[in-house]
Length: 170
Image (cartoon, rainbow, N blue to C red):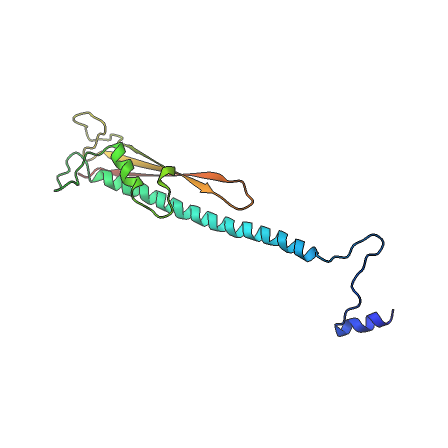
């Protein structure tokens, strides 16, 4: 009994704990604690990375809405540029343009593009849809279903949407 207190301050260990009274020693508990801690750490790290990827995707979705709107405002009814710039602007043309922008990491099949031409003060003559006369508005909304996948968490999607509205200039 007196030997053990004298050896402890010197950094020497006594005999390993043994099974006493039906209680097992704690050998291997470090392995279990490490596995649980690493599982939690990896979930947290990959979750932070996935949220960063979602913010990155939202930035490009909002940029796609702005680009789609710019595509529509320079292709109004009085567009007189040389070449094939002045194509007939329609919902389909804007959607094809936005989906083919090729933003890295954005899956175009998860993207929905909607263009509307709400009339303002400028008259629409002839009154056909879309009303793309100069002075009227064009509004492009891009919706995106972001696939969220974090380890040990149920896979889901985050619905993102961005809208851009500009006045038709040509």
